[in-house]
Amino acid sequence: MYILLAQRRSRGCYHQRHDKASKRKQRIEANHRRADSPTRCWAKKGVAVKHPKLHKELGISRSTLYYKPKKPNEDLVVKEKIERVLEEHPSYGHKRLAIALGLNKKRISRVMKLFNIKPYRRHRKPWKRANTKEYQAYPNLLPVTELVRMNQIWVTDFTYIFYKDRFIYLATVMDIFNREIVGICILANHSSALVVQAVISALMDHPAPDILHSDQGTEYTSKIFQEFCISTGIDISMSAKGSPWQNGYQESFYDKFKVDLGDPNRFDDLGELVYEIYRTIHVYNTTRIHTVLKMSPREFAKKIVLG
Image (cartoon, rainbow, N blue to C red; front, side, top):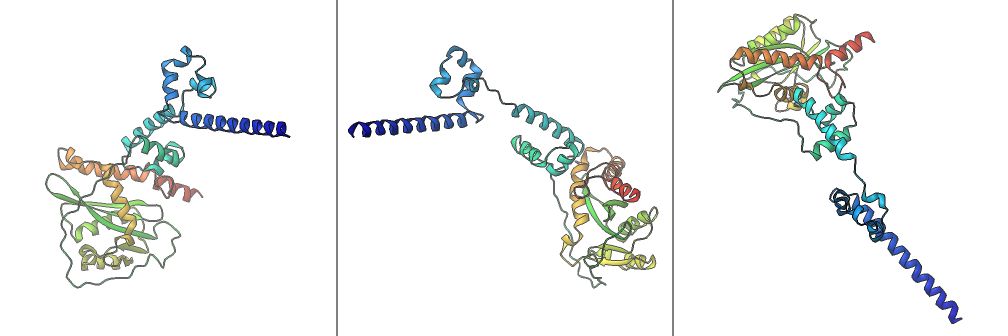
């Protein structure tokens, strides 16, 4: 009986020692997978060659000492591809970069975090006087209108561009079906003429829309703008006061547009800046990937027309 108990105890001790050794081996292998693992440093310094029994002392396989990870090299290649795309489209986030490169967006996001790559962002707002005049406001027709075709609903807005100690103003008109900028106007002031001329430029190449949506800025509540829309048979739609998200199509466009445009003060004269504004909008319409469409606005329009 005493002999049987002794044998059971010895077997139990053996299993305990074996479990501890296997757990220790797992910890060492997990530690080796880290980028700062000491076993990797030993492999780089050739310690494994000088000490052929080192893997036995560490409780790991010998091939582990010679392991060289491939992921850092692959990440560097992806990093270079990301930087090349950002040179042309500096406002691209990880979703657009993933579409442009044909890679998984999670992988792009991980590499951007690893190398601290961020899309360029800039924000500056000029002082704006509050609108205290009485005006004719129209309801927001976008939530109650089903979008089914191009040239059905246009949205319009304008933004500022700071250039050599002064502001110039850009007004645009967007077709929300394919997100294409169909009308443009650039002036040195923000008046009714700015927004009316933007709509006129859109009507030169496109049929009149059913609805034109804007905010309640003084330019859009002016008598000149509203009478012009009514005379062309366009129904006016307006965001609620203090609700810029109700015209989020234009707000989002301007946010990315200013990033793609870059620093306006790098141009020697205003003519060069105006040319670059038109060129940037042309790139947006023809080649720049839209997150919702997964392609450029013109490519999406062709796809819809061809069916």
